[in-house]
Structures are given as structure tokens and as C-alpha cells.
Amino acid sequence: MTKALIVAVVLALTGTDAAAATQSPATVGELLDSGGKQLTGGEITRLFAGATIGGPALNQPDAKFQVKYLTNGTAAGEISSAGGSTQLTGTWSANQSNQYCQDLRTAQGMPIQGCFYYFTMGNRLFMATANGRPTPVLERQVAR
Image (cartoon, rainbow, N blue to C red; front, side, top):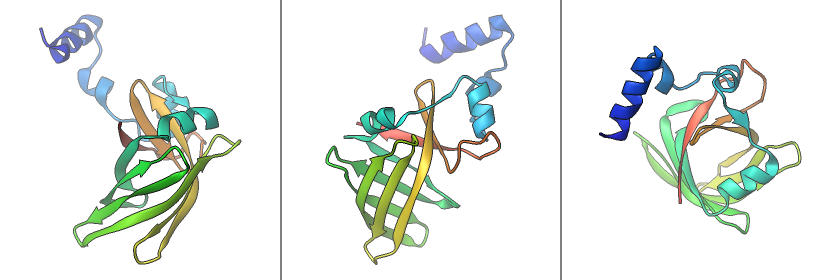
């Protein structure tokens, strides 16, 4: 029996809707209500160090990024959209306010800076610009 079939059977037996169980939360509140948790600064550092993380760009859903985060606090990757792609380089860290912070630049010198909150739900990773319940979340993919 495949894992997906086993999950479907368990969901059917418990009366849980499979679509609802796999649906992505839209806000921090929905994520937390579904069993998600906010990462601490230390957890962010451990998760990001050595990982490649990607997903849709903030406020630009048609643009996708993929960045490799090195243990020395540097980062390099690429952002792409239908209009083309460009390289990203810079630094990253986690602060005592439990935020991931980045100071990246495109190959053309455009800054991509800011601090964000990260959350996990099971083995899924999400980011948000704030940790208030109505704040939208974006899912991220992690590879090692």
C-alpha cells in the first residue's frame, strides 16, 4: 500500500476531508490553528545553514527564487520570471526577535532586504512578513 493511499484511508476513516488536510494555510492564524509553530532564531539558523530554499517571490507570485544559504552567513542563488532571470548574492542571519534577515542584491545591484518570520507545519516551511494572525503566509521548499 502506498503512503498516499494509507493517508487517504485514515482520513476517510476519521471523517477528515483529504483536500482540507493537504490545503495550504493562507494566514499565520490558519497555520497556527492547524498545528504550525513559529521558528526561533536558533531554529532558523539550523534550518537555513547549508540548505537551498525556494518559492514564489514576495509580492511577485509569477517570480520564483532559489537560494543556497551557507553556514558562514552568505547566500547565492537566482530569481526568475517570464521576463528572464538574474543572480542573487548577499548575506543572511537570524536575529533575537526570531526573524530571518537578508541583505541580498541582484546582479544589477537591486537590493532585496528585510526580515521575515518562519513557521513550520509538519515538514512544510512557511514565511510571513509579520507574526500577526491575519498576515498572509507563503510556502517555501527546502532541499539539502
